Length: 170
Image (tube, rainbow, N blue to C red; front, side, top):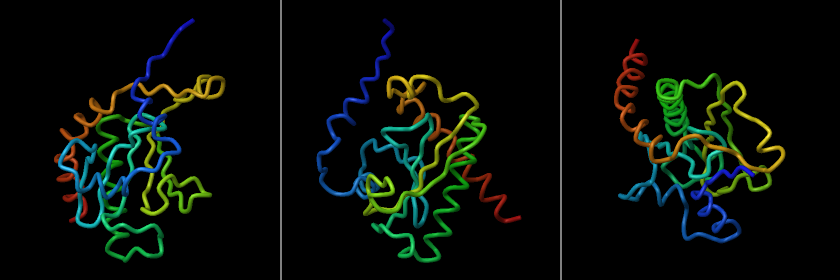
């Protein structure tokens, strides 16, 4: 029998069904330790998902603690979408995906795990990135560690920021 070792999943398993103290996004934004935040802009920020659907799964959130799309002001909306553009450019440079799933779950019944703080999911996709594992054994294999991916993305974020800012000025 083949085994796939995924020790980082233990954290997720232990957290399921348990209430955590405070908001994950607010905590990550304020934290000075490693929090996998890869971009900080005026009104929004982006961070790696600790329990990704696919390699490079990023969440983009407003800095303000708000759970409803209609509660965002125009500056926040514009900044979130500029951050989305920046993250897609970054992921294109580093991971070279062939496509993306981008979505927002609003409300717990829609699948929002943290309904009180709105966030976008950006999931890079490649041809044949799904296989029998999720179907037969409810297991997803992620090919790169969060630490390795975080370090690669952080190394590239400044060149990407400069490139997107130049393109915006044209």
